[in-house]
Image 1 (cartoon, rainbow, N blue to C red):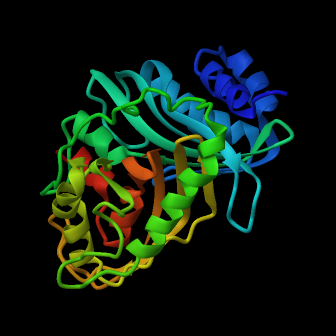
Image 2 (cartoon, one colour):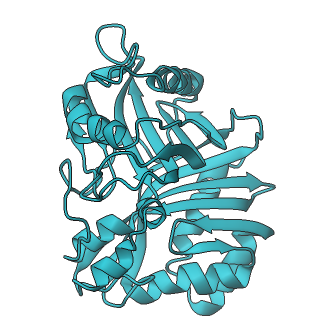
Length: 328
């Protein structure tokens, strides 16, 4: 039986080494004619093969010289949410020399690792739905044009899993239990003490998170180590700024071996009630698109990679991050 994950992965990789003539044939092979392709702000939605080529693959190839994919996680599984379907989820970097502007971000003329979280719904061997969150804020940082007045954690390249087994994992018997622990964690994380920002069941011997958990956050938040680092660098600042946040509105939740992935488009609704990353509170209602990738170990979450559409979020606050970066 064909491994749909491996089949789709090969196609996504081949598209970056293809000539213009080959690209058209490959898009036809791997993408349904009715595919709806959504990319985080400022890129938008595509609904034809021509747009997928002209507005996604070609801009990447033109901006990042000799660009190629470098997958860190590539998993697949049946969606546990009510809309169902077989989904593939991946965390990748588009690697190349950033020699031309990309969707408004000015080039650095140096190597970049462009971070991207991706979810693909597959039917009959073709992608029928795609959602990507590209970390433009981290790209701006790599290009020396970081537009926000402050940052939180450690800004860094996303590493792959510590176990180096995130691409096409084989331990299918663990898929259900991996997603179970993630769903339980998310259920308890929603309710928190407004004074301490603590939530039920997160830490300790019976907690969902490994003591030495690593949390890899997007541009602006950065990465952190252990629960106290997560609390300091993300949880407390985020809940202070958005104390009424409601999350977990996911279109997809899958498990694959020791891995799980979830995403909402948007996942969160909230009000901007406190200052955040140097931006004064606006009291505006906001939504946030989210992708989370998890590695579990002995029944606990050991690593969590997070992609957030911060260009869209800050646009709702009245801040054009790409314009701000271009002026630096």
